[in-house]
Length: 516
View (cartoon, rainbow, N blue to C red):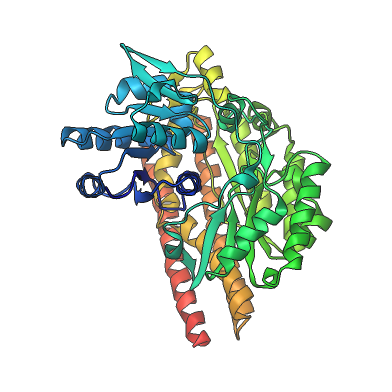
């Protein structure tokens, strides 16, 4: 027998959840391997046939990938594989019945945190025992889905081995390796669009648990010794509410200062706007914090209330102003559209984006709030009988047909800009490159001039995007919509964005020519 467990997991970014499962299994004496979710089914079948594992574990991170789970698992079964197939993740944990009923090739669902449950499942299967009695599992039995008693959340995260990083050498920026890590699990908040609270609130245990600062920095140091210098914290919210969150972060800062690598790293965090404090963030910057991802989500107080953010627009504005003053870069989540969107709230959102982004400090980004499984907004829309779509495409109708039409126009118009190779993605990636150049290669001749040119490109892109959003909003609100006028607006924006991509590439080449 080869590996005892094969994970099929999304690896375009490091999958820390599966990395923890794999390392925990190996700490208990079992062998495992992680293969990429995006491999073709034939290659996956070939690998599993060769290894002949006890168990195949599917990691379903994104709800919209359920069809992929169905396709691959059935493909493997149809070709004679008899191994135990299990699946984990937010959607399977919260909708285990749907998963088991729709994908009959799946034997079980590991619900919520899976380290102990999965290890016991593998051990029981290896020994030929009754796996259906294990806490934390769901399965299909006699025509219906059954869920056993939920397993409590792990209380002390320091007891977990560091996650396995099968693809760590594949992620780099200008030759500097980067990786993701977690300092905590869970979130005390209950935003209406998020399933984190539902995921960590269902099993017994504390909603949020943090690793000790020493444990986190030990992992960072171990990774640093392998050549990794950029650390992307993926915590849903880096800080706990209240003074305890800052005390923990201050201990982390102190721990970093004690090590001999803190002046040779960069790191990024996610947090809320009301957690940005000028003095404290200035100290974090001194030990490498370079990027703050803000959960802004809306530039309208109406929208923020719907999202249960427990923030006001003024809090978001203050946070961005503070980060700019400190001299750090920032990114943000923003839902231009939500189930209660009106032309008034959309104009407020556009005005907000102008206020924070028209200076070219950050490329604008936006999306539509979607009613994912387990979220409060899903329940609200269900009560209002507004839910549409299926497992992989949950959605809703807006309150007016005009808003539906405007959303379709915006989606089509910004499709190229928002694509993985589009201007938004390129500008965001280049911000990371600029930070890497400044930190690890020094400000060579022409760097500041190049920085100014880059910011002007971002500024032009933002203004063009916001002007397009605003002018088309006025047309749809007026009710005097002409196809010709809309096509002209679309064509003008696409033309401008493509010109800016060309300008960005040209300026990059010119600057890098000076470097050499």
